[in-house]
Length: 119
Image 1 (spheres, rainbow, N blue to C red):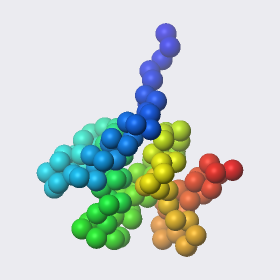
Image 2: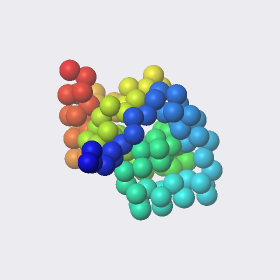
Image 3: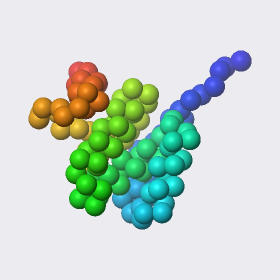
């Protein structure tokens, strides 16, 4: 009758809890989240936790790997859940630095969408 709701509205408090959980992930839970996301790409909670981990642990993951993962998750939010509070969170975890030249087409697209969202 009303259709299927793809995304539940997430509160800032929920985002903050997921960010905290993501920052503190160890290897096994990190791998489980990555696998969970492969089977359910629309899992916003998993994306937020992974975004937090890759932001906090860029040197552990490798700078290029972490950047690509962040771009992937931010682009997904911009294209699929643009009102999610992670994109405007005070920590900046959901924002890309678009002042430098993008290094991939996904980053270019994410910066374009991020710029539109600010207007």
